[in-house]
Length: 86
Image 1 (cartoon, one colour):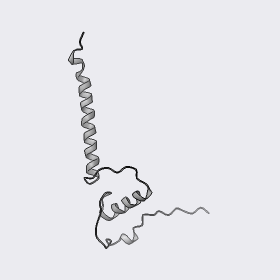
Image 2 (tube, one colour):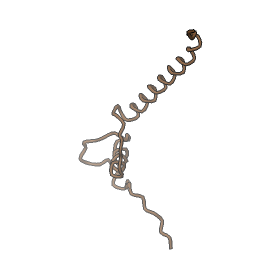
Image 3 (cartoon, helix red, strand yellow):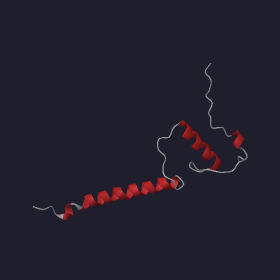
Image 4 (cartoon, helix red, strand yellow):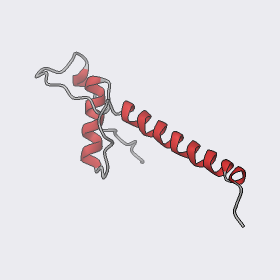
């Protein structure tokens, strides 16, 4: 005995919605990275350099070729100092 196709429609709709949501989230992440693919396996150096790029350009994945930093960047230190315990 066969299964009526009406009983499979909800499963098809659910799978379709999962696919649409996954594609939308992938496109959103792609746009947030400035049109570049997401980075994987980041270490501390990569995070520091990405933070520097964000402070220089305003985007995490942005890069600049200017030899001179913008005004105010000389005081923009990425290293956080911890409070001393005495």
